[in-house]
Image 1 (cartoon, rainbow, N blue to C red):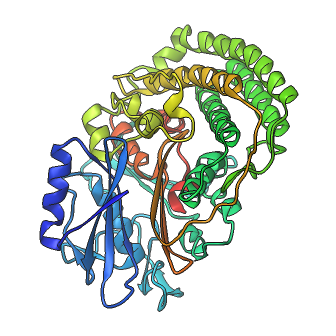
Image 2: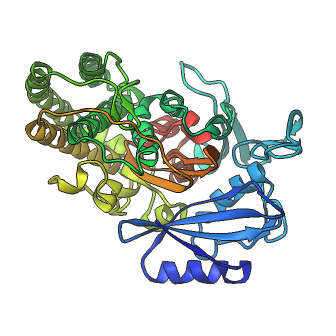
Length: 482
């Protein structure tokens, strides 16, 4: 990975040049000072590679938001976590909504007990007949906490602002410490339904100096697609639930249960935990089990196709989904939308094809893209990706050859980065290792940006459509909050 050092004066100019050349911003984050000044890292995706631009800071950096509008989200997070002022001021907090004694990513001087909550601001929309509806953070059903504040006129939503951060656990600080310690079980808890993607991202950085056995690479790719499979099935089944499409909802739940039971057969865990580790996989999967998996997927494919037909051929369901919750391409690009959400709005980016990590660089793969950006488009993309996952898993099974499944892995000093296509989209892990210690660990879950898509997709719809739009985005609270 190439690193370019620039001054604060050239920081924005370099970003403009990268944008002109077709690069896109992955993340911006700060490292605690090692002497008198800290570092601000801006990571870019350039032709299937990661480029790191770093600049020294004494607590102030210029904003990149004029070049990449979604940079402001990362800068807000950097400000509240590391104390870096953006253009001389602190922007509004975005996850850790508390201020007081220090900042959470500081090595010393931070006292959480002395911090005071930052009040949730009122929405900007005002006028006669405009009312605010607060929803959450406690919701009906067993879901994670999040606060949503609607401004409405009648039933039509004029403005929506989400407030998250209620499940903040300090995951990035927990990842610091001796690089020799295996933290694969910790990264799995970043977001429990994307543990394979997070584990692969972590493992790839730890494996920078070794070659992972091919059998382990094939199995990890297969498990990543099994994870994508059950996530997408859960999302489309949830859409049926939130539209009172009861029978398909029950059928979708049954399909997901079958997928989770197969996960348990493969890895002894329904959500595929404890399978991917630095250097390979924790245990092998037998040939008989692989044959059973291949047969199982053939039957499951027919069930998914039947579910898709029942949903897409229903006029009443289509009436609920079409033109509902539209996230236009321009808005999607402004927020840096990623994964199925971005592809449903016409953004043709998939990290599996772009970076070719694990086995993806060798596999035949289609990338479904829709352009309408509504609930129907997001549902179509998910069904198409389910079909593609069946194909990719079958290719993995066909490619499987006997061999070792794990080697010893430990990185040296330096800076490492891994970009993965998780079920929800682009997942970024970055790690700075100094003298055998993880000095800084940084994670950007795809939900971090995609949550802002709700601010564009919900206004103009009626309040009862919010659960449906929310379900079609299928985002993670814990992945966002870290």
